[in-house]
Image (tube, rainbow, N blue to C red; front, side):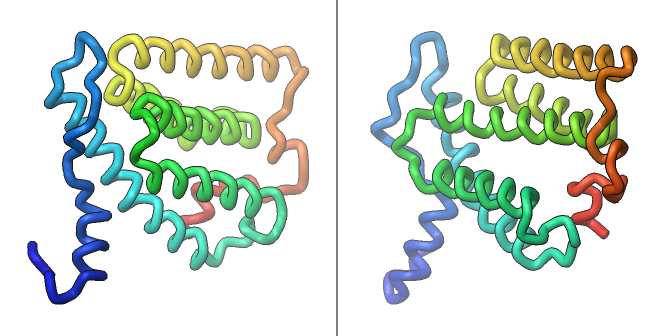
Length: 183
């Protein structure tokens, strides 16, 4: 689309469309078109998803987003996502690792807070699938073993009685923050 008479609309359209980068260096052993497609998909997902997540977080009426640890976590993660979305000149592997780190952190946070839950499994499965897409088979295998190790350690500690999920051990609402967001 061409909106030459509206430069702001053209700039916003190009921001979300993320044109292909001609200067993108392809790592050895990866087909150049595949690498360029992965980079564009990651950029578009970040540039569309980050504003949507920001709006959803700002306008949610959930009680868990009072100005406490929950708010701080979402502010830090949101800021990190905005940085990843805006800095396209950062190396692809760094941006992909940032997304994978966030997914692992959310899965870990969910498991530590609520034990085995649908959300914690969802984060870990999303981590594994995303790792395969962003980092290849080796990245997917690493994500699989990291997820399994985390779940085994938490289950082992809970089975020994050395660990009680944080929300169960307190008077907190047993709804996960991610589930409570939808209510």
